[in-house]
Image: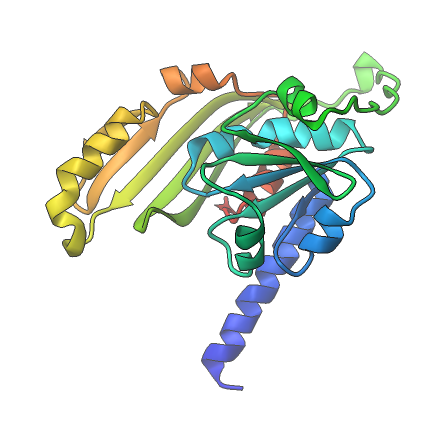
Length: 258
């Protein structure tokens, strides 16, 4: 085996370890063609399958909601599949995927419903036609022994693409004692020489999306979605996740965090 192949194997192995570690923290199952039948179509639990794209702001906004569902309801399976990830062609051929995020609600090996776009916990369970059984509430810790973790900053990024257009997405969070105080999304869009004639058209497309402010850069343009933006407010983002949970949720979607 030459060095390039060895290095590629090491990277794949490291990614698999990271994904498994993330699954262990947040109880969301990462799915591809190798485990799709077992984890989704042949599971004995009602399942919420999240189909995401790393270049999709609503997909990122949904992470805390999915973490909370997986944490509260052990009788429900929450699973995620990345549309742009390798080894998902069978899933693409099986499921009608037209927008991101798309949630497939599955019971007894059948798709009973589908939701396109961000959704609340209540909307997901209504579509699943299932009332979950919450875990028994833990006894509250004594006030004196409750440990405060203070304010932590998390920044995660990944390369992505949308409609063949390459980009780089960064999500930055400020989290205080398991509450997300601030969320900031930056998408750097790269306009290649082949796309230069469409630069203005592409820019207008992102402006009209209403996901944030758009400014020109040397390599293309930048879409900035700030915490107080109309888009973030309209998404009504769930903000109860901890630093460790959000880091795991973003790593599950292929982000590298620091």
